[in-house]
Length: 407
Ligand SMILES: *Cc1c(COP(=O)(O)O)cnc(C)c1O
Image (cartoon, rainbow, N blue to C red; front, side, top):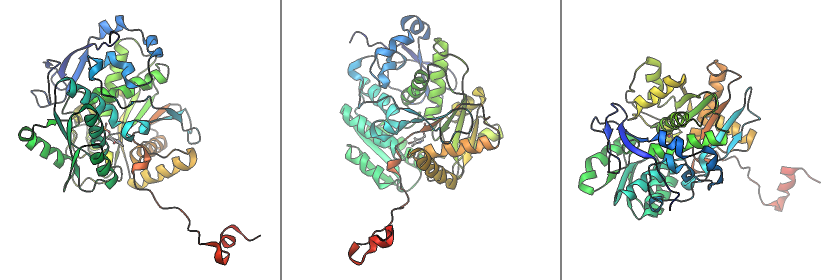
């Protein structure tokens, strides 16, 4: 189609800046670090007016100039809808408090954004089989998009991954393995057998394009808010693809002159049972050590070691943000509070951002006059919930009267 144009120019090592050729298959850079996609932003700034987006379909392909897929025929799509930004008006205690609800995306989580782009590029570059470790949501998105593209997929999950995730991944066409270990143990198996099995390693940040998909969260947020970003963004951080991707998006938008006002402060939210980024942030380190015995109800952020740790930490520091950990009890209480006050069922990871917001408002790290956007990254429906229904016995002996009051 003639209106389909990507301004992708080349790739680059995220650590050394070494230039890497685009349009070829890559995993990590020669330095063993994540690879970032780069665009001809000067040409893009001249070639595309932000107002011309208005007429486009409401999905992530509206930002195709800033995405790596060169031909529309390779864009694998399941309907990556623009997700709503909702006000948490009943819970805000100062400046506006908003939440972007990513649970509306295909496969019920924002992993769809990343895997949509990773699979589209894999298709463009002739990949036949993709493999990855997953705590659930990424595997589901890989399975769905790979199947849609006619590519085989293999997903390795920790054995305690909820049944519903294992089931949805398998039903969408992937081969699923349950591994007695954590997500990085699953990742090691992919690394060890990928050559023998002919798998393309699609692990977080081990290929260049999942970041580009997650980047669209940041572009979309900016567009929805009239190209003016909030003061603070709280992001539930596992591998950090979304945080790195959004920070990259904001830099690109700023460079093409589309943003009004200031850059936001980026806040990485983790659980106290798995907080490697918080520990590294607080100690001033550039890299995060592996977190031993990681455990949290927020499975999506149970990532003991992140390959992009240095990129996450750089984004937090460059933006004047911070990293914060919240207890599982606070996460579950936050989920209940938001559901009861706002009618919005968050996933535990999304609830963690609200718990972190409250803690940071209380200790002054977020001021009352700072506007904030939280991220709910998955539908709340895939997670265990408390059974709060009240039993009602058959009415034979007048038990309805006993419950509701007699006439
Ligand atoms: C994957 C995931 C996260 C963490 O996202 P990253 O960008 O990998 O840090 C948070 N919440 C949910 C529900 C997830 O599935």
